[in-house]
Image 1 (cartoon, rainbow, N blue to C red):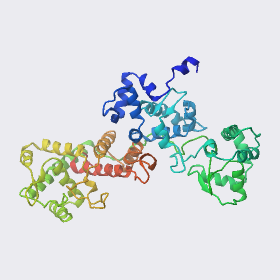
Image 2: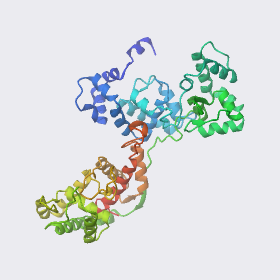
Image 3: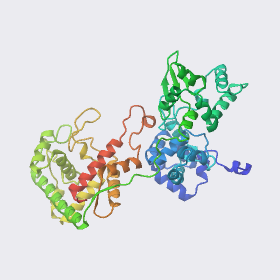
Image 4: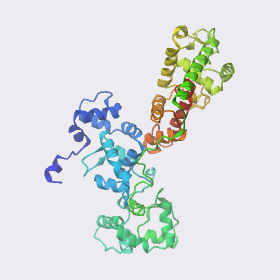
Length: 490
């Protein structure tokens, strides 16, 4: 890079945003809508907001698995890193062609979303993302890599570092900084590292193999065995605390043939077809189920027209009333909860507002009955598609260990509409008349949003449970609810 090019290179995210055109800035705001509320006064404020923890966490949650793996690799790469260094971390020494083909898209996506800035020879992951994804003793990196030699030897006595140099056959230096640099250079040199490892007994290599894919930390006694002493003497394991050692990042990368991830996933898993039916059969089945859905809702509303079950003090249906409704509709209780919630969401039932509150059909029910069947069905399907209330969680427990009741509070799940839309889009991508393998749908959703909801402990706080399990359950419910409604058939 020439002196002029260096001076023109952006020195901060704010400078990188200033050279973007309107199309690029619009793409950023579409992908990260939280950045525009409230509207930033200038690009400096936009850059500051884009680097806040809350906004970066949201952006990471929207990444697909390979884009996330790319960000994780940048978090353990030099800062800044060149595109070549990133490619080496993602593809390894053998340079997986699928990774090489997919990496430009992933890097462009990270840059578009302002998670990465800088030219290809100076790629920088925004500081907050690096803090969230880089390894530390408290929060291991998703890559399973540990600290660099420089990080792991911080605080080590200069004499001890010189002893390590002597053990690996390197000349002594005049200061600790150059000593650490020399050791890191040795560990990053494939040929010299191979020769160093070849000198070790097999028991020592076995220890390295156990740590190579993470976690990179292990325990040792105050008087370690000879095969562990061989690793400690050569700096292949470095002490981080009394009784604790770590495998330096450079050593792990050599043993991994340069790869940051054990299994890069550059290509999304395909949604597989379990069976294929004639389109006419699918349409006829779906139409029959749609009519059955209208009949079921009509039966429910007639049942509650003059005043249905009592509203619980905390809101919702009692377990006993849900069972009675299920018997009346001749369906299982979870299915009854679905129909009750659907009618409620469509505005067809509500509390009657009396002193002894009961659920009852609303005036909208009379209007709904006068509509043609197609319009009645469309109202139900539209309600279902956009509803945040999620009847599948009925019967579960809330954060205070209270039972979640049909029509009660705390049934809203903000991810539900997005998951329903995405599941239906995946089904629409199958050949006409094909029904999906459910697990392949879930695998695709997990690839598309691996960190959706409270993500890994590192990004959202210790102990936070991941919610991709909830997304998987919503996807399963979507498949069955779509069948109940007649959105799908067979």
